[in-house]
Structures are given as C-alpha cells and as structure tokens.
Image (cartoon, rainbow, N blue to C red; front, side):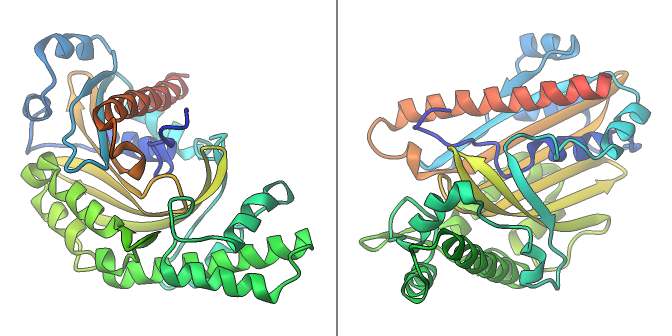
Length: 348
C-alpha cells in the first residue's frame, strides 16, 4: 500500500466478516429479493454475470456520497456445500491468521476498560507511543480536542526518558479512551461519536460520514428497510433476528499499530441474510468505514455481495479524481485478495 491511502478494507476484520457471511449461506432463504434483482440493483453487467456464473469474482460500482468517501463492491458465486462453509467458520482461525491483526477482543455491552486489557503498545512501538504524548490537532492521529489534552497532561506526569514507563502510561491512557468511546457509542449510537480535531477549526466527523454511508446504501434501504433504519437509529430497538456485537482490534495500517472500534449487526430472515460492520473509531489514516455483506442461494450454491464504504481525508482536495481512482483500485485488489484466500480455505 503506498502513501496515498491506508488499507481500506479495515474495518477491521475482513476475513472474519466474510467467514461469518458465508456461514449464513447455510440458511434457508425462501422469499424476498431474487439474485437477479440484487444483480440488477447493484449494476453488474451482462458480461460480468457470465463471469460470475463461472465462479469469477466480479466488481460493481458503489456510490460515494462525498469527496472523502471511497467505495467499491464485489460479488461471487460460491458453489460450496453449506456444511463445508460452516466447518471453515467453526475452525475460528481466519482472524488469528491475518498478519495485520496484532490483537483483538470482544466488548460486552456493559464492559468497561477491562475489556481492552490486551490492547498495548510494545517495545518496538515506543516511537508511536511517544508521538501520542506529543499529539496535536491535525491528521497524524484521530483524537478529539479533549483526548489530545489528556495525552499532553500525561506527558507532564511521567518520566519520558523511560521507555517502559511511556509504553505503560500511553497504553493505559488509550485503553481508557477506547472504553469511553465504546460506551458513548453503545449508549448514543452515531450521536455519541466524538469528532477528530484537525486544527484551525476543522474537524473529522465520522458520525456524519457514517450517516451518509448508510443513507447511500440503496440496496439496504430497498430490501432491508428495518435494518437500514436500525443502523441509523442505533441503539433504538433492533429488528427481530438481529444480533449486535462489539469488538476492538489493533491492526497494522500504513505500518503503524491502529486501534479500531467495531459494531457488527448480523441479520437473518426467511428472505435473506445481511452482515453489517461499522468501524466507528479508527486511530489514524482513515476516519471510519462501513461494510455491507449479503447472501442468498444462487444456482447450486450462494451469491455473495460484499461492499465497503470508507472515509479518508487522504483522497480529498487537489488531484481528487486520480486519488479516488487509485483508492478504489487498491480497495478492490485487497477485497479480492481476502475473498480468494477465504475461497481457498473453504474449498480445502
């Protein structure tokens, strides 16, 4: 990945996301949108449908609601017995074998800072920890004005010449910040997401960006309106048969450790299955992301639609068109790579 863009299938956990999605292919989907309707809605061309039917991964356009948005989608037909898919998912090694994931953990709804106990900087990452002590408003870190002030106060209270002390103090501080951001989101949803201080009065606004990403999903709005509404209005009541899960991930992005907070909604019904994954806090490089994945039986297997909408300041401004083109290409390549790896694992 070059310096223009971060890894933009972030959000964290593309492998476990797709594995969870494919597990849903074992479900009996008896009514609702047909594969042809979904293929038509996302705009897969006739020639690409032929490729899709031959087992190739094909791409489709996903709308980008503003200049900071990057979006892309892929589809695949998997001629795979549901039992083999379930077996692959149950092995539980997809996330653990992602080389970019340093650590991760579940966050129960009532959990506090203890849920982030395994998040920590290492001795090899002491420079990143020191940079946090010197954090300022800008693009280097995604922090609120208050969070920047907390790191400044921390710097004044510790021996900055002691690497061990720096690592321990910064790790503890970041755990508290992650716990507070998680609780704010769990209790207030999009309204609870603190903005990022970019300096000179500018803000990074993941709340607005995620709202726009959700509103832009015509597939979700057309076929799963209750889920679409729930995603916008969380933590209001979720539709029946919807599972809500939270997770933190420490993932390498642009060669830097990156804390990411994730909300996942898993919905299953008689007419389809959808997995939505929202990275509502990211430590740096990009602002947020949202993944849509849906599946239903198709021919002798399952049709899988998988799209990512990500927001990053790195593609706006001068040369925006070129940056977007490069970003979408990088995004598609990474999505395909993840899906190919999963296909190989499923097919053994």
